[in-house]
Image 1 (tube, rainbow, N blue to C red):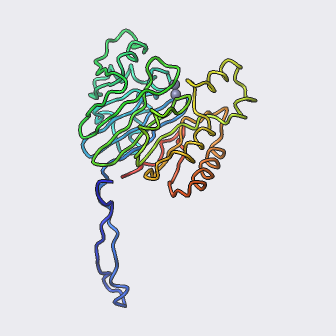
Image 2 (image 1 turned 180 degrees about the vertical axis):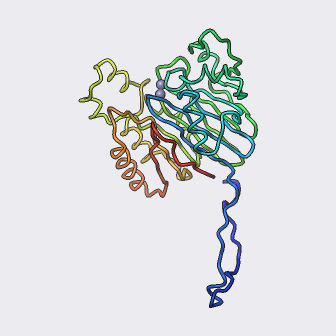
Image 3 (image 1 turned 90 degrees about the vertical axis):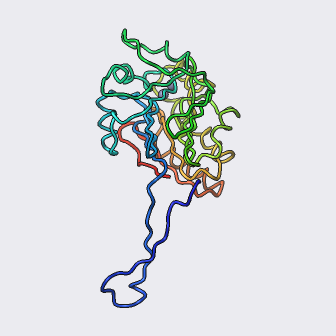
Length: 290
Ligand SMILES: [Zn+2]
Ligand SMILES: [Zn+2]
């Protein structure tokens, strides 16, 4: 991390009886360098906000404009203040709100996605102004360095992102069938990692999906199982990662309690003090600050 997060200040409590009680150490937090919040995660809609003091990036727009505005407002942010919208891939749960945002006069954010992703989205006859890039490209948005990387998923040209600003690194990898070395490479050195924990294999197998859909979810271009997530945590998670956020949980084929149990076991197995939290479909996560 670029600088220490806290500074000590000595101070005095007025009217305190003893000298010891008078002398205290005030723990004063500095303004955070980077804030991150998962606004929604799952097959009904995905969006996350990453913000520094000067730059605000929305990752995916899989909520209606109205719902997005509501969830941003709940963490003290506004659509109007977004500098950029970055899209991971064209599946509806990641772009359902995008055509409306792209048309809105209120939104001044530049929309970034790969060259191949743009034509796969139904823009409703509108010709949006886009900043298209090649998967694997690095971008600079305000004071945030963005690295895109290809992920294995059944979309046209899907990518994950790693963000870095003033020494704080945040990586996002959801919607991927497995974790190739090339993806693991980009997840290293992250202070916060948003990683997919989509399904419990046993629940998926006996669950309500037709067999063809089950095969798709389990395939190498589908979604990450709890087991793959927990293997990754046990074997590969960087000890620098202080906050793990598990997301894109299936509502049919997973349960937060199972994900929580597996993450706890995996972290204890590694002896890591990494905190974890589970992102929800219905409410924004905590605002993580670095
Ligand atoms: Zn998705
Ligand atoms: Zn997807």
